[in-house]
Image (tube, rainbow, N blue to C red; front, side):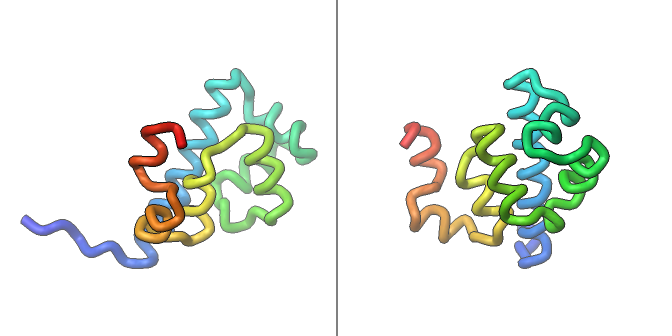
Length: 102
């Protein structure tokens, strides 16, 4: 049985879901509520909720604040910005680099 072909649209949707999951997991690790994250980046809790539900609405400045606050993995952010797995591997953000801590 063959796998479904990865279209750009499917890749973008997967990147959004990965980003949302990574933000949530990191918030839990840091014992930080969504309200606290919003306060840390200077926005209201409802706006933070809206932006996390649709990361395409995030400005670069807000994205940068979230990345810094949560100390997110660069590969998660690069996927959200449209980099492919092939490109991530080429730039050293592949599974081998992440697993080795590089």
